[in-house]
Length: 429
Image (tube, rainbow, N blue to C red; front, top):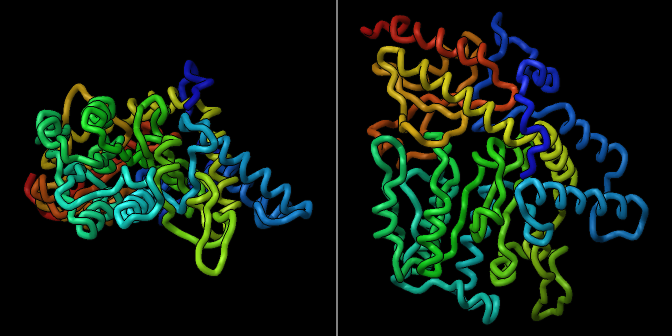
């Protein structure tokens, strides 16, 4: 959330020294990594933090009286405080999960449990009834679509979708019509993982609040690339992943306003999230611990905290400005290549460093393999957003996505290679 070095532009070429993987070659070509939207590379500081814990203080947390257990618990909760501060949250409002997919499933299944009568009077306010509506968008990652499909199927709720314009922006007029008195949940991405467009959070939150609906934000592509303050955004719940923000795999977060987390019934159950247990019933700890059953991902949380500190030291305003510069250079150059069609080529919108495109006459997978032969790593396929690709008449696209270490020369290498793709495959320009 904070940006201590906002006035100091990033030097991505210098930062590359922090990422040992970037020094390798692919065949004879230097690695150009443009797939950070799928998973980011990890700076040495993140790897070292996780390894140091495993070598020096490895122990289970919240369940031991010995020295290592006490130190592990302190490091674990310090990590929660660090990451919570990074996203504009309090410690009590950040739940550790296995990632954004786990966070979004937690919310959907917890609401389903409320519908089934679990959780008491506070949870009853979240229950769905047949004919209630869940509103998502046409640009969702599957992780913020399928859990709601399943919840609708289990409860009799109706799933509705905010459409997208041809330029990739959400149709807010349609949203105002769709979000009504039967709407109970509004779920949407902060940034599209395909289009890179920053969506109008304030407008969607206002529409949801006006009808008393709960808002759920997929923040996977915003937390690594923009200054993010969930409390200031006004969303009720938000999910993000560690591995997209320079952190480890297998760790992510669920932010929730305190009253919402308190009202949500438990989802996963077992050890570490209970106060008392008899043979017939159990009582649960308050949030966030009531959602953290089982053995905790301690080293991963410590690595994620190191990633948050790394980004915070760079300054998230500086990160955002770097992303904008890379995005503008990339989009402008792609527009000049014959046969390349950009997805979501809206003008006058805020974006992060994500560009998805189609090369006429050449399948996305073939484009990806051609680029890989030149050392350029991009994403190909539907990017877990099949309905969005269908909206644009495609089955797949190529996606280039940037990070703090992406340089102008990386962009130039991509553009130079793409200029040769159609000729290589014998497609007329």
